Length: 477
Ligand code: FAD
Ligand code: NAI
Image 1: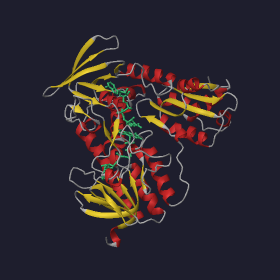
Image 2: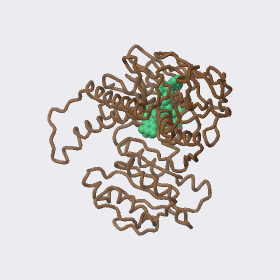
Image 3: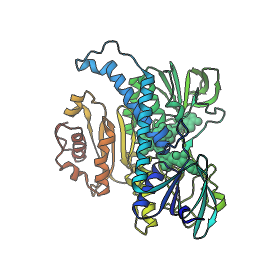
């Protein structure tokens, strides 16, 4: 193999885990290549993976646009702004979303050039061991064979199918189809009240669809803090999302332009609903399709994820794996942190990812964000804790915004006062949670946050007040 085909590091997958790993490896002085197979509508490369193309970025673009539409329809009037003749131009909304996606795709191409990462457009497949490393074949728009001492697998995940309800992306939609519906469905069904179900259900409800969400578990958002989940459930129901818990889906029958779901409700009664479109968002599965890992002996775990240790090493020395294709939360920022940490470990440094301080955000309105332990987890683990909450209703900035829903909740160790968890449902929770993440990384106490000066009027004062509430010393509630 010619030397130009030999690399120090080859990354397979150009999503948030892969492209960030490639950039960090190149920054550390490694000759680095990244292979990604995603194609845009014209067959060209579309770097950024699920997150950029059919995940985080397009969903947030539509959430923003649909929120503007809803505000123009309802919320502006309270501010004394009358909007006459409001209408929806869905085509333009989808076009804008595509523009946002493309700007992110192009941004990564620019970053690869800037950092001297060599990009190969196509599918990467392990071909075997090479001298001092591994050979990876590239097939697709680019055909090639390259080798490297270190290979990072960052091949991501795909939507999980419900047996008997294959995605056709016209009537039965995964996240991909849910982002490209070209006319607002009168009746939209969603199976799974998880992150995608709530975000995409919110988009289409705001644009005019009657949305029914069918969730298998008896509790709403069972993994998040119960108090926050109850508040969110109340708010979403008030907005018009029909969330049915504890259902059992019996069958999904596709018609020409609709789909019928037969299910048993929580009481066991047989129900049947016909929808114009159905989003199935029941989790995602790791993607190792066509990767050829058997050729080099990389093992999967019992759930089909690439098996790795705490530092993202597979069972084969020199082969690493990061992001959605390995255990842990399926989040873009988790994938990125693992990508950086692996590049640094290859360089002999001590890359580190703290799983206890990975924030979660659900971008509904209001947003839900949290980090650390929930109250029910602390109870289960027998940890003595103190709790403090503060409602946005008592926050001046929230009143000025016209968005006083929700609260901030602090959980702190009863003895040391160390912050153990922070949970927010409310306006811009996605940004507010960062303060809690930083505090927890520095192992701060609730007293630390309570004594820090926060700008007035700002939503972050609710964070300070919740910290004060841990010791029952809220000033404004
Ligand atoms: P991916 O982003 O899936 O990238 C993997 C890449 O590898 C893809 O480009 C794929 O084509 C490529 N690939 C796979 N196999 C090969 C191969 N053999 N050869 C070459 N290329 C290959 N997370 C958040 O943190 N915040 C959010 O707001 C958020 N919103 C989301 C909304 C939706 C609708 C969805 C579906 C997901 C969302 N996520 C969000 C999750 C986030 O998208 C994933 O956690 C993240 O993309 C994982 O990154 P990754 O690099 O591991 O994999
Ligand atoms: P999810 O795991 O968040 O939710 C799936 C839901 O479907 C669960 O509530 C589950 O109980 C339910 N379910 C499973 N099988 C079912 C069945 N047969 N019938 C009825 N209900 C059933 O998965 P989702 O929403 O598909 O998202 C996948 C992942 O993508 C998320 O877990 C998250 O990691 C990531 N994501 C992150 C976002 C963010 O960070 N804002 C946004 C969207 C996705």
